[in-house]
Each structure stands twice: as structure tokens, then as C-alpha cells.
Amino acid sequence: MVDSNHKGEVVFENVTRAVQTKKTETIILDHCSFVIESGKLTVLIGPSGCGKTTIINLIAGYEKPDRGKVLIDGKPVAGPDRERLVAFQETALFPWLTCYDNVMFGPLATKVMTREEAHEQAINLLEKVGLGDFLYKYPMQLSGGMMRRAELARALINRPTVMLMDEPFRGLDAMTRELMQEYYLRLVEESHGTHLFVTSEIEEAIFLADRLIIMTNKPSRVKHALDIDLPRPRIASVLRSKRYLELKALTLEILHEEAVKASMASGKADIAIDSGLRT
Image 1 (cartoon, rainbow, N blue to C red):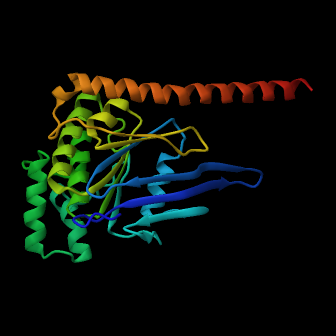
Image 2 (tube, rainbow, N blue to C red):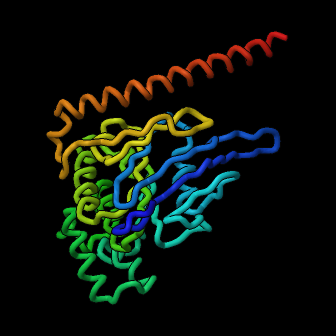
């Protein structure tokens, strides 16, 4: 049921998605069903290649399911829409615009705000992510972490109904990544929007999530869903709490099962290939 106070509920109903080549068809998602609750931060984690980015693309409208339905607030996703924004792993700032102008670009281009409103929002967001002193710096003058913070501000100023994060902090050093997580949580907890965050890092997943969705190996479906009942606002000390360690142990156990299955499947494939070479 759609939350009456929020928009952005995402529902996958028995979604199957396959990739076809001239010779083979690879099933990525197989009768995959889950709900991303409106106004919550849901984190998606699973083995490498299990279809996490495919799920992002289906919600964004970049791809269509072969079978099943992807619904936003009860309506099928028909294609890309400014109500759904994606933050990818790679930086997407315009190099010819300043940090401030990058953040201003979206609301001015779509005319959802006046220039005065956009200016106020841009300054506010950039200050919240620690870039108040870097408004007029160009991307090449910013560190990797600072560029990611500017991208967060640029995405969230557009007030998307659903914010899709595809491993946006991947490749950052540990300290910068922890800082990005704290900035991101601060913005999410203030906006109360619907967020789907994809990651391969268990610590990051548990630290961020209201709800954690764990995927199986390919062909993928939901293996388990956990409510992360750690208190908010979240701070780094929660990583040392008893409850955090319990949730981490449970998540590791579930993912280990899938890793064993993947290893066994790989071993069988190797045996089949080896047998074929001997014939």
C-alpha cells in the first residue's frame, strides 16, 4: 500500500530480465519480487553479477522487464522520468561549470524552481555537504570525495521522488568513504525521501539501511530482507554496538551461503569445460 504521507513506493512483481546474445540467453533476474517502502532508505546487496545494476536500470526506466511488473506508486514504469534520478559510480559533473553552477543546473533546466529558490537550495545543500567554501571551484579543482559530495547536492536539489544510488562511493579511500556515508545519511534523514542504495560492502549496507535486501546468485531473486533497527541519526559509534555486530554476522551468514553456491557452480562449469577439452 502506498504511504499516504510519502510518494515513491517501488514494487517488483515477479520480474524476469534476461540478456540475449546471438548464441545464448542469460537470465539475470528470475521472478524477482520485493517492495521498497516510500520514505525509507533501502540498501540492496548481493554477489557480484547478481543484477543489482539491472534493478537500478529497471526502476530508472532505462530497461524493461521481460516478464512481470515494476511499479512506482502503483503505476508501471514506462521510461525515464525526472522523478527518478540515478547517481552512478563515475563522476558526472560538468567540467566547464563551477560546483555551484553544477548544482543549479537541474532545477533551472527543468524550471521547477525560480532562480532565487534554486540559489537558496544550492547554497544550503553545498554547505551541508561541507562545500560552502568551494562554490566557485571547478570539478578539476576538487578532490574525488568533494566531487561526490557535489554530485549528491546536484541530485538532491531536484527533489526526486526516488533516488537511486549505484555504488556511488566505490573507489574512494576508506576515510573519504566513511565521510561520504555520514554526509549522505544527514541529507537522507532530513529529506525523508525514498532511496535505493546499491553496494557490495556489508559494513556500508548495514550502517546506511532502514531495510536491507539480500539477493541470491544469478539468476537472482530476493534471498532475505532485514529491517535494520539501529537508532537514527546514525553515527560511526553504532559500528561498535552489539546490535550492529549481530546484524553483520547474520548478513555474512546469508551471503556466505550464496558464495558457496557460486563457487560450486563455477567448479562444475570448470569440470564441464575440462571434460570437453579431453573429448
